[in-house]
Length: 122
Image (cartoon, rainbow, N blue to C red; front, side):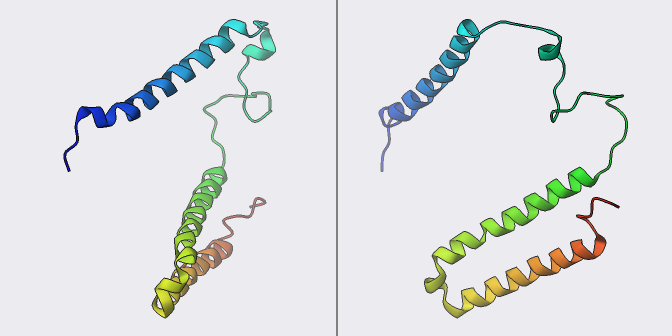
């Protein structure tokens, strides 16, 4: 199957229009929006709390651990959707493989619980 540059024109047009739309909306909001700068608007904003102390001070790794565990289990759950869609086609072999996959997830969850990875009062 031979393709030419003309086959890619609709894709290139869509990319160009999307960039143009983003640029135009940012420019329009900048030009049309109110410009009321004050100390509160210019201050750093993080999680609704006022910044206190030095940014270099150490903080618990618990936040990173929870984020990593969330991503880990979230990605594992995503792998279950294609299996559920093709459940009948995979048969007992697919059922067994998913059973092993779920067993590994459960072992990981119990390991987390034993290590008290999700306890905030540690």
